Length: 602
Image 1 (cartoon, rainbow, N blue to C red):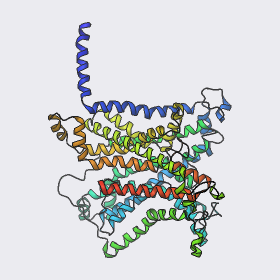
Image 2 (image 1 turned 60 degrees about the vertical axis):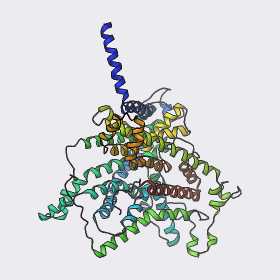
Image 3 (image 1 turned 120 degrees about the horizontal axis):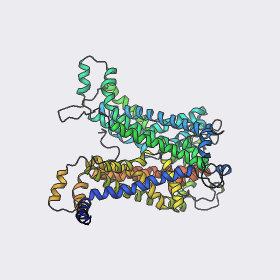
Image 4 (image 1 turned 30 degrees about the vertical axis):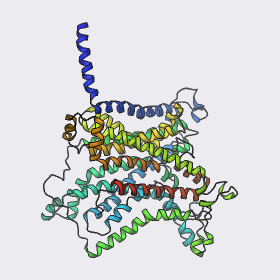
């Protein structure tokens, strides 16, 4: 026995030494453990919370301290089950499904016109079309409210149409399911535009022309040739939009649609356990999306359109009139979706009172005010003791907090995602590598509010609620997929021979990364840092449960809305929009990295 051990231990030690000598193995092991804990532990915590008796809530009236299944029974079959769960679930599913359809139609049509036709102004349209996605999610929702709300239908102050023209829109148009679908469709159309546009750009037109030679009708060519080739991009869009729309809070909140996310906020104080069940249900949909994604990748169908042989991407001639008429229509469309919201928020900050558009009727500049920007005393009763934005220390402290969280999350998520992408690319068929890849991607597919709920409970138990540490941990875990997928795709393009040649020269791993790997794919890697930063700056749903309202800019904006200080919230929104657009534009110019590159807007 001792002889066997004496022989086995050295072999094991040598194998372990060889295993850990490769940096990619050590990286996978470390992040496999860390991400498993940080992803699975909060999920387990929220599951336990659904059966825990919460003192002072309704479940405490139906059992002693400890555990109970009352919450599960009551939310699914209780007297308030329809109002508290089934109706919100129905609205959530309708919102997610129709947002997918709307995003695919809008983004797909736009992508086709940009990549496959000879219309003018492609570069401008390519940039402006993605503005609704770059801007905070609630931007278009607030713009919709400012346009169509009215005292008679929605209550509160009149919007622009009601105040200036006396036009009162019906309730179904002004708020509820329909405007929520429109807003989320426009917001997420960028997903479809980028994914479908990439396929359109590289699709060999010989495929369609061959069918046309056989006298196949254009409608049949679209159904039998074009649409099947777009299937992977359409499926990817559905997976991304469905999960994101399910967890959306700001849009249904501002447009007064009851969904699972808004119902959670309503229930979290009195029915805490049932609110946690809502979080679990949203997580289950996210896991279902991950399974669907995995099954779609195992399909035996092939969608290869780039073979190495000569091909061509011909442009559809829309005629001399169409060359200018179609872009004119698209420019008007993007004017309302990308440019008008910025102008609208800017103008709202100069109104003396919400809904007071008398300036347009009189042309008198006395009907405008700078107080929301420059007021610096506590005497104005209408401002609730608040200073103007330029002098408002609370806002600038919250903006500082946003920068701390955004920079930290971008650095950590970008670096971790880069390392995971590199390591997985070295072990493409390894089951553990695929597990690490999946566990890193899972938080993105989970609705943001569900992730926030899990970490709210987890953070409260760990004593780190309302700290930058908790926000950075959550943001990093949520945004790692941006970097890991971008890095993985770029690393798969690099031949192993490049790194092996440096390895033969005994070049250390850190030098191989910094002098060979990263410079080759710097654009894709920088995008893995840029996307978490931009997303974190405009994030509300993920962070709203994890900190006080004065901690970061987006929760501060929500606070001013609750206070009725809409000019302040519009000013914060305007500052965030301009900041995000400036960062995206600056990095595009410096590094050519950005979400609008590579589609065809030349």
